[in-house]
Amino acid sequence: MESFDAVIVGAGAAGLMCAMTAGNRGRRVLLLEHSEQAGAKILISGGGRCNFTNLEIAPERFLSANPHFCKSALSRYTQHDFIALVERHGIRYHEKTLGQLFCDGSAREILAMLLAECAAARVDLRTGHSVTEITRADRFRIETNKGSFVAPALVLATGGLSIPKMGATGFAYETARRFDLAVIEPRPGLVPLKVTGETLELCKALAGVSVDAIASCGRDSFRENILFTHRGLSGPAILQISSYWRDGDMLLLNLAPSLDIENLLADRKRTRPKAELKTVLAEVIPTRLAHALAGTAVSNIPIANVPDRVLLQLANRLKRWQLKPSGSEGWPKAEVTVCGIDTAALSSKTMESRSVPGLFAIGEAVDVTGWLGGYNFQWAWSSGWCAGNAV
Image 1: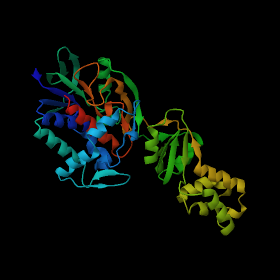
Image 2 (image 1 turned 90 degrees about the horizontal axis):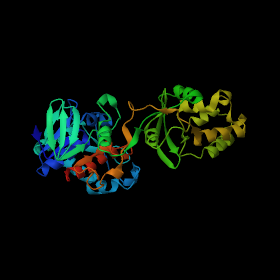
Image 3 (image 1 turned 60 degrees about the vertical axis):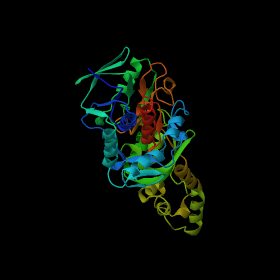
Image 4 (image 1 turned 180 degrees about the horizontal axis):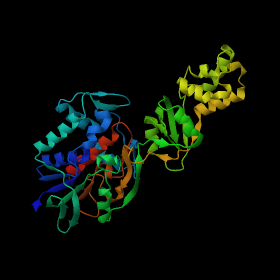
């Protein structure tokens, strides 16, 4: 049986950051990964270019039952700290939009950087090790399919339930419950939404069409593109709002956020009376969307002959389209997990359990979920750094 100062279970973004940070402090660290590849999710992120952080990180852009919990970690290890690490390794990057930073080349550069840092810190990384049992007396004892290990510190860094084809499991939640840590029921986040009935038929007809829009659910709103699909709605604005949406909630879509559509239609009725309604709409929204929303009854009619009440109804549909999704596309399509290990059980400074000394939880396993655009990677770096400085 081998002994270590800390055993970290899960060699994803948070686990790698925690391991290299602890190793750099002189700790003897074992990093276990059940698959044959460390950092598998890093490699597929950002379309293979890894949206590794965001310039506009702020606590209010994270969801949690305790919205204050993430403040300490995000302020102690910031996006600028991680950017400095990236620059030290000579990795070229660019801002794509809304503060999102991507590698110019490949996500493999970020993974290679983390692995190099772990190697320099003498982290013992072992892949293909599945944990079969964890017990605790004076120390934690971790049984795997390839041996047993003991350590006074155990870090849960196995992530959540999103993208099961990448090996996601409920391991962190099961282990947390075994040590009497509360878990807030996880649900899919940053995930496309499904619809039924007439709305589904419309979405199918518009599949592939993307439009700038505001998606709102209650008091929360996001403005980015939405994408019509054969199953419903996707695109950045929908993925963002999906993390706030619950079954039964209504969505409100504004498909023309930059336009005073009522005045535009009234103006065209006066200045271009012979123009067909679908043609007028196609000036300001994608043609297929214009034709679909105009409807077969009035689509080909000169706008001068379209009753004002019909134009008002159309304007309302564009600016205030209410719909009720039938569900999300679930874990296979979810980019993140919303909820997780209750932050009330953890120290916001160290990520250590308040009731089980030596037990830590970091990254996606914890009830902290960021917006789309590098926020969840930053939570992995920040929470991993905090735990790595405490084990």
